[in-house]
Image 1 (cartoon, rainbow, N blue to C red):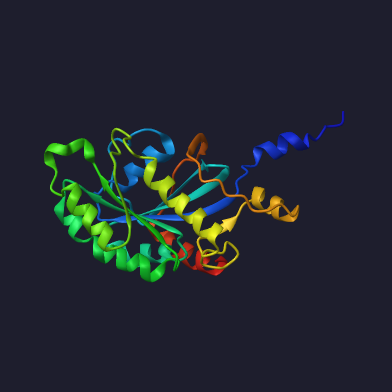
Image 2: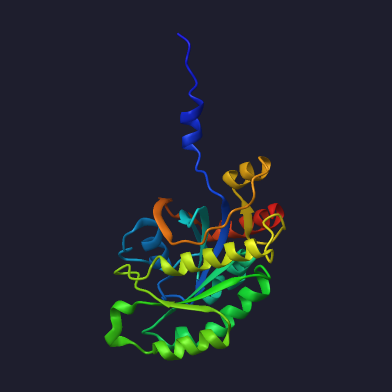
Length: 250
């Protein structure tokens, strides 16, 4: 009996998107970075979360207006002993979520150091969103919204408060950063073909380019149409090897 190859079915199995964007999620240990990503990618709160060792990788595809965008998400350890390893993953990032805990003033006071590292190592067009996490613990707040908003304005970054527990505003920092990146591509400030930009074309956009279609950017609302991927953990002892590999291919 001859097997029939269904090309359309095989094509559907391949996730199609217009752009691939590299995001890094940084900040002090305990600020809720892993829980933030888990809520965003899995639509649930991560119970009994432990400190990240090295880095963790996950992804999710979202729609920004007419564009389908795949976010490559790198969750980095906030502990000082992993700093030299995790900083290697900043290279070529298009967006940075700079996370602090609104109930921990120390996590807020160290933001400048984290931002300086990201800007020194990531894309020159890096889009940064300051994320104040754990708004569900309002009674324990140590950092006022007004203070964080002022810091964000002074450092030329976007600012949003969220709750990884309730999911409040969990979509906004990712969508805000992705939209800003697409606008930079549309305006010519960011070139997906340039190494280290943190952005690359997906199959859908390449097909449009090959067919001679004009690049179309509609910056509408974020659609609920999306795919989620699980979190892939990279053990600490492998992060060194992967760092060299990632640097080589990018």
